[in-house]
Length: 117
Image 1 (cartoon, rainbow, N blue to C red):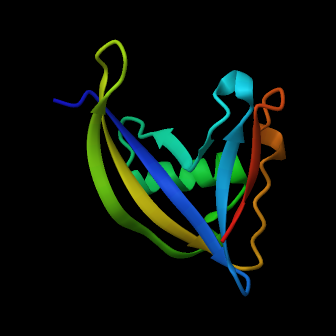
Image 2: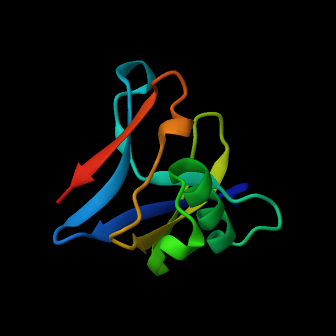
C-alpha cells in the first residue's frame, strides 16, 4: 500500500516548435534531467500540487496554462528504505508568451533548465 503521493509534470509550450521544460542536476546531485516533480501535500488535489509547483519552481501562474493538466499515467514504486509512493504524470501546456523563470530556485547552482524538440 503506497504511503505517499507525488505528481510529475511534462511541461511544454509551442512557439513554432515544441519546447519542454526539464530540470538538470549537476553531477554532485546525480547529473540527471527530470520533469518537474513534487509531493502532494495533505488536503491537496493533484491539480493543486501541480499549480503550486509551477508557481514555485518555474514562476508560471495559472494564467499561463493553456492545456491540461491532463493525466498521462500513474504508477507505484518503492524507494530505498521501504517508503512507497504513487506517482501520477501529467501533461501541462503553457502559452507561447509564458517564459519560465527558475532563477529563484537555483540552490547553489544545483539546477538549470533546458530542452527543445
